[in-house]
Picture 1 (tube, helix red, strand yellow):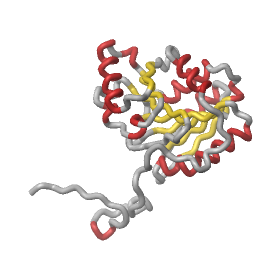
Picture 2 (picture 1 turned 135 degrees about the vertical axis):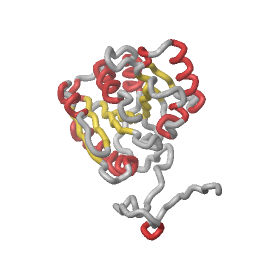
Picture 3 (picture 1 turned 30 degrees about the vertical axis):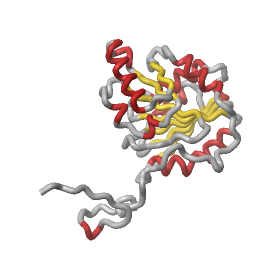
Length: 229
């Protein structure tokens, strides 16, 4: 079974890119599965259901989405194998732009919105810096010059990634991404593989549910700013 990890900021068009790329795969829909990792709520499963694509959604709740991802990704792979999928896609949202859901040896995709701001690629962090393929959406809304500047800024952060512009409405550009997906290696398990970058640091008292403000309530991993007088 082939595994592809797809990540990106909220509302960047990840689900649309996945659906348009699945439509270009030379694989029946019942041989493709999607696992969505989110924080509090998601309605993307309705879109997958409409296309007859088997999917599962998990919510991290108050747990860091990266920690939730890495705790469940092996179970997701084994679920995909039991279902007999040829391709399994995981989708996770980089809510803090610090997320790093990319695994060594596994094809990783970062989806980023061309309307999010010209300097956005510099702010996203490991999710973009360590991706194999960076998909830019909504590029049809901006000028050619803006697309080139945006792509240049992506290259400044990740010089090795393949940059693809995909229209999430028409699917233009998804054929090439589907080819990359089909050419990736098969796996049986993720055991003993490593993430490409460390996860966000934990745990502080607020991670475990503390809501009070003040030094008395702050324990564990903390980082403080220095304010000039």
